Structure formats: C-alpha cells, structure tokens
Image (cartoon, rainbow, N blue to C red):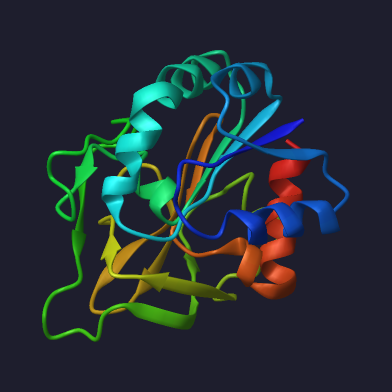
Amino acid sequence: MIAIVDYGAGNISSVAKALAHLGAQAEVTTEPRTIARAGKIVVPGVGHFNRCAALNREMRAPILNAIARGVPFLGICVGMQWLFEGSTESPETPGAGLFRGRCSRFTPEIKSPHVGWNRIEIASASRLLRGIANRAFVYYTHSYRAEVTQGTVAGTRYGGDFSAAVERDNIFGTQFHPEKSGDTGLAILENFRNL
C-alpha cells in the first residue's frame, strides 16, 4: 500500500486519482500508524512551506523511520522541498535535512510563481526517471525552489537552474507535479509504483 500523507497542503486528491488510474493501492492518511506500515510513502503538496510544521509534528518520525528501513519515499513540490534543510519561505519550519541546502524564492526579476509547462534536463541515471526522454515537458506551480545540489538527477532552467528532481537510494523528489504532467508524469509515478 502507498500512503499519501495528508498534512494540510493542497493537491492530495490529484495524486490519489493519478495513482488510482495506474491501478495502485493507495490510501490518503494522517495516521502515523498507517504511514509506519506503508510499503511506499508519497508526500505531495501545494502551498506555503509552513504547512510542513504539521508534517513535522506527528508524521516526521514514522516517515524518517520508514525511509531508514528502505521504504521508497516520493516528495512532490513542497514535499520535495521538505527533504531539504528548510526554506526561506518559513525559516522557523525545519525540513527533513535529507538533502543539503535551503529552498529559496525566485529572484525578484523572475515572474513568480513559475506556473506551467517547462522542460527537464536529465543530469544522471535515475530509477524514478527511467524511460523519460531528456527535455520532456512537465508541469510546475511554485515560487520557491532548491538549488542544483548533490542528489539532483534533473534540473530545469527558469531564472537559472534549479532542481527538478532529486534522488538518493530510496528517497525521491520532484519539484514539478507528475500528477499534472500528462503521460510523462504518469510514467514517473508508474516507475515509483514499480520500485
């Protein structure tokens, strides 16, 4: 079972519908016990990074313990940003610290939020992006982003390069929304499902 963690951020139902379309057994949950027994975990999200305060309260320990046991984890948008040390959007809210760095807002001269279709540049081999064409289009809606860092497997250029997807061992994240990215996004979710 894939646990879709509901911590009060947006876009939960779109992720659930996309996984159901693929035939995946998934459950939207706020329960730490459900998260702890899940075979895979997805943390989606649209919204302010301070929503992660709810994620950090009761769900942080079961998520991090599951990751430590090797359970595949996928963070989407704010869910990916949570994998980093934090964000300047809500400096008092810690991230999981699984990737180094803090997410920050696009510079003032760049139109923000970054909404719509953009290309990903695949930088290295990735289980999550297996079979995805380099420069494929994916869908974004965000104002904050992570710099390209160790663990970045794909980047996007918009006012400079940022991390479009990160991956290390059983930890995966996408700044874009695979659930809104057509066939490309469904193929990415299928790759995660099949891990």
